[in-house]
Length: 327
Ligand SMILES: [Zn+2]
Ligand SMILES: [Zn+2]
Image (cartoon, rainbow, N blue to C red; front, side):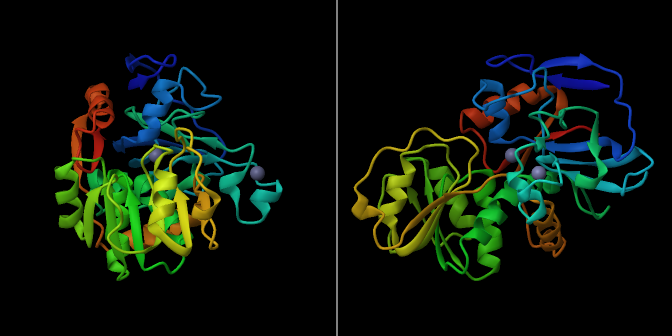
């Protein structure tokens, strides 16, 4: 099978022919149809995350068909599944036993410690796969499995916030905008200063307002979701939210946060992060996706062009999400 591999930090993907992985117990072998490209894949390329298991096949937004299954797998041959970031958890620690498996210290993640979906086939633990409707289009379903899910978890963390600022308007933000407007909330999109294309895209998707992240919010916001990996956006967002407002940092990696006066946090403002996802998030979000109102904007590439897709994401040359088409 064709597989794209990072061998060390700071290097491009290398195309390799490998044997299809064996499956046993809970495992399934998945014939990949499509795999989304995530900013986290850039962090893996750059070695910006700890404990990356090189050589590693990236990819954690996978849509495919189960073609082999271990005897204990809860999903069977012939089923269509989605695979997300969470690949395995211990099931026994305090976090796992209290519905917070996303925080498990022993957790393993696809495309990071477990080989992911930049390949014709991938192995996954069937207990961490999400059954998908066979009618869903592969290209526009793949981005839901990370960009969509992380945005969804971030939005749920914001509680009943009505006016929500999104900082960094890429893959996750454009999907969360569709969820939020469906729920009759208002979205204020902050893009890279001068990125008029991103502003137009945000307004087209349903944002109430769009502007550069160097501009103040046009009104007091209830919550801010930060998707861009720029720590300077945290003190900026603190100025935009009203008392009691929440800043939610959704990225796995962010540059250092500059210091700011305590008065900007005062008034019961909160800052917190979103880490990973639980399987419950996945099931809840896929149920929402099945309603059919989510229409992620995608740019597709053949699997063999994955390096070009990563370059376009790194250069901000994409609108929406890059998706590798495999099958
Ligand atoms: Zn655990
Ligand atoms: Zn991701």
